[in-house]
Length: 463
Image (tube, rainbow, N blue to C red):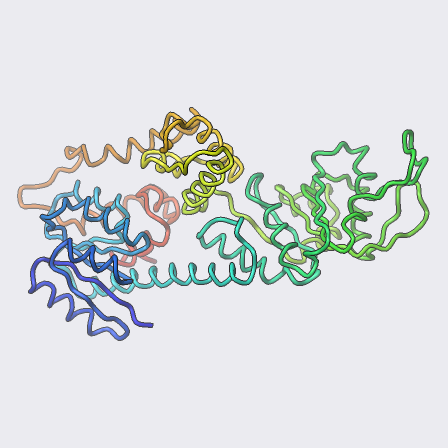
């Protein structure tokens, strides 16, 4: 694979220096541009894996230039080179999604490290997108939205298990899409022509659950006026999705185990053994291993249903999926309500990404449906969101936006300051405050864990 790097600098000498540094690396080709207009023109016509640029862009403001670049190539990593000691400017550009900045003069090895890391991230992004496309060509995953690594991993597992008859256990918090994944498994299996039957153990009273599962014979209990098949039997030839299995009583668990192992059951009040050809997919929002230790869930059933486990991450751990999901729901509800396609305001995007989403995808869907109902124009604004989302999220957004407006926090000496040294100091402080927990330290600086690890490597702090 050949990586294509676009270098934007208004000084021809600097273009030559950077080109010489990069052209010495196998598998990399460079293109140069001397102004913003030419840079944008290249990005509109060609694909690049990395942009290296300075901040001297008179045709456009520097932040406007970066925003325009991101609008043309959203996933393109950007390395900014600057000779300026303006800390506020660095904070501004980092907020625009810049991968890294380097202050001149910089060491060649630091520059090459930054380039290699940026190209690696670009390669992984392309790989994930290609994998997603390949999976979608082979399987119908249109309703599973997201480009995060967690979603890609789930799609791979679904693709692997679909055409088997193995029992699957899907775990995850409420609202993460367990039934959606179960349906994807069914409709991409050789049982797709058969029924997909759902039963939520938490939604049915305990005294009715057994008859719903296994059916009953006439006269089995009061008001049992005729024989009735249970949900498992109705799923014969297809898939039975047993949701919230942790809510099932210990005695019923033994009967479900028999269905899984022997493929047979008996009606309530009956004596005839009925053979059933059914695949069972289970789901729960609880930790079954803990319930087994507490004696509330059968260990033999747990080991039998967890032949192929699939874990769904909560939405707060895959924030990169929030906006794609939001746009999906906006389109869905705009069409359903007969409205023109509604878009998101920039402030709203920030609020949605900052929200904790305790209810996960289901909560996000409900919030967007409400917003579409309230919106009278074509843009969702903060006033269309629930108060809880705005109150919880907005203070964090204000803090982020307020940082550049407080230059008094940074006491720059008369002889200037090293931005690299300042960055190293901030990274070190974050590690100290988080007691060397890299995930927490990354959050303190508003960085992803991968980007934070790169900063550690860059400054020789990785141990």
